Image (cartoon, rainbow, N blue to C red):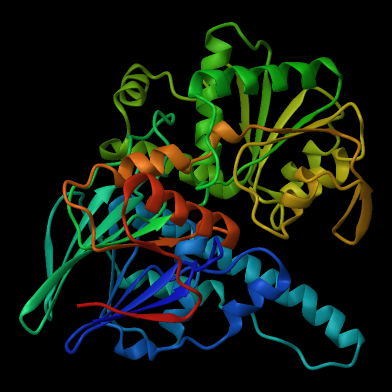
Length: 464
């Protein structure tokens, strides 16, 4: 058996593993690279395999760095099945179309520039129609059920506690007379997140591929984090400006609404005007309500009693461009939640352009900011940034609430690994910046006495 680590190797994005045996040819994830332009250029490179020969794609969850190249895969000839939880199937139906729309729009803008320069036009990575075509290959599965794919492969999805429908994937691979069990953690959620259940412990496996996004740090406790978030919002609104919250449309936006609703009901924050400027976030919130199998007991009770996020505060979802532009005319007391979470695309850039230079405003970051993204530069303290062709001073107050991350921290990752009754033969540390991944591998060796290794991009690993 051979596994090629195509992406998320010594980097955070682009999750994709190619598993080959004598009889089987499957992928785990098919994600897009995100961040700096030179990193995103990798999305345009040909796949290092024949798409038409891939029998199955096993998808851990809907985030674009795990799913974003699926339309390209289908365009290149994939005719197999894409297995994912039902919630992930529903979310991909929204997110992949939105991703395609961004690619089409970016190509349109680039071609206007190229036309003026006398250069030939470029095509988008994939179109909305091509993204829609790829949805035909999705097949929803349930948690905790072993599925026989044939050719010596069996799979099972377990709850990863990261976003709605996220999964840890267990894969049993039989090659000749040997069978080994592979574990792909996907993105593991931290414990006690709002809305969704905690990740499922796994107690046996031969080879483990584990994420390491926050493998070098520990989050604050959730109670302390919510108090910190409440204080940031309160201080910001008292200053007379707006509060801008860059947040992923799927997962993080729903968490923030839940928390704001909770703080409002408890009287800790009052008279809140909240705008969610993301059509995809509105669709994702509706999808959340469709999947009680993914939600924790507290959320299910809120849904049953009709007290879901937004019920005790003024909340408006905006869909049209005109509604989005109208928000920018509001100069004070608005909480504006918009995507993308790393500020490199979407409507959040317009809200930063109108508010980032104003000292009475605040920006509250509630999720991971990858290297070379606009969000990362702001968090690191740059004094000026370029947004939509304009130089914008960073005068607003900047808050980073790390404890709201949907990713498990170092100690939670170690705790999850520590649940194995028998030590895996090897742990492969993935989905983290190089320094973080290397450091976390060393921590695994020292604290758990497990063999840990950090693959490089496109490295082939021979197992069995």
